[in-house]
Length: 369
Image (cartoon, rainbow, N blue to C red; front, side):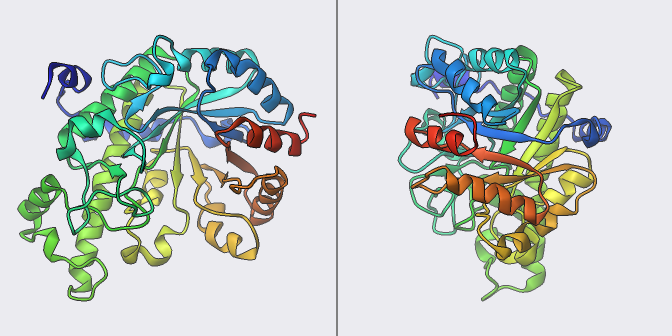
């Protein structure tokens, strides 16, 4: 390992999980206003963000979910991870945060928790530490939809915990974010993961079975063995979320913890590879805002998908709105209306990356043009 990569990932002892129990003392969800949020990367150049935020505010947005960590890189100077080339020599997080607060908008620091490389993207973190990456049963790293070329990292690897805890520590210590949002606190939707060498050794030590011998689809494995492995993988991710939530709350006691979840995970749990036991997060008070992601609100079937989160009483629930690729803006308006009909009054829109489409979204929401 080079001296540079060692600087990115100083290994610290893991925090005691018992400390995470204090997360139950987080502020009550009732204190949080209805969320009309935008999930966004900082624009390039970042100094132009004021114009974009003015448009968002006029369009009715009151919260920004700023992606501060994606593809294993930060948008701010970090001692843990490399900084995105597009934002070198500046602190994009500080610029956007200050500009949004000046306009009375809440800002959440959004991180791609375990998804450190999208297919086609470069991730210096993954390049430096391929041994941290999750693999499928064929030994291949994949993106969220199962496409080769992406990379999730393993929650069973101690250095992953350490790096993420230090990252959250930097966010909580150096910035006055109103909250933190964990996206991709799960495995891939398109393939079964969990065959990293560290995962296999840890599972073998605890259960005396090598995961490579467990068929996740049950064609050659008993339901009991599949259940045991699914529960173990869920617990690995839940423990990580608990540690990160505790780290953030310790530094920012009034901060809000949010998470993007797969809403219908429990409908077919053993056959769903994401291993995201988000109900446990809510029951333990680890998160206060649950964003129902991965859903196109296009008809009655959407209501069935999000029904598991509509009835939550101990967390704010929000619809995750993903515009169509050929977005005209009207698509977003329709999806918001469908989400409301499904019972979700709060929403978070994943803003298009290019200028034309996001301007169309804002015009359709009535705030521009």
